[in-house]
Length: 366
Image (tube, rainbow, N blue to C red; front, top):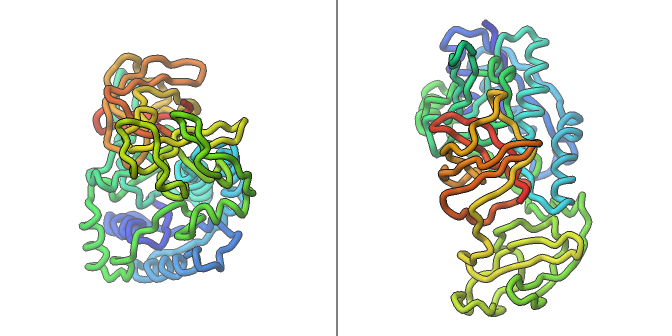
């Protein structure tokens, strides 16, 4: 069986290829180039990543192919990324990249190469599950809860999962690094990439300003509508943001807020171009116990039950929170949480789970 492995130059995808080779598969490595605008800058690691992939492929004795998906990425991911920010929301392009590039363009290309399956270094699992005479492919959390990436994969469908292997799903990151070192892979101690793939380590606002020009407006207190300062554009701010407001030291009028408590973004008035802020991390305006989600995507293709206790993540780094789906219909879901959630953010994804099974989710639209 031939498996084409998406290799990024990191330790995870390298060990995924290593494990599949040891399991007897015919392994082909594929390096995807998804960004071209400034790939010679100090922030883009594409060239070094390709060197690392080539070195790993040489050690493993596998063929390597390089494919350029930059146009597809710009059309399907980056254009949506900019449109969402311009509309005042905070998108998650990694989720869109997975569904549109890594498990669509990459999958299609691999099938054209004659692959039986594709594989990536994601920390997640796929399980074939039979129920009521129907066989589904379930998306499961990884064993390593600190590295689980099922949140970013919730848009995958049955056809995509049926062709996908996640070799690292039952491993912990420390084991992966040990395996890489034992196999003589020089990337065993390579630092994990962070942030959005096409931005790299550069200042985020600086990057965004290249595509979305400044639109200065007022920063106002949510509680009493006082003008506290000026913002350079609503698209540069997100709900719950504390840093970069430049209004420190101004006292609020909340009795329970200390004089020097930090200010947080709580909402945006797009029509008036006003950014509203509150003082204090635990301000009641930052807490909500329900949300509306749109652009729904359910892994099995079937909607989950309403009024049934699930858990959900309204952002990647939050723990699973008990919830119910109150209503489903017309492409919308109403989700109620057992406890108020902090800084629910339009444009981010809420992902629903039943135990370790990722059911799917949608985009938050408060």
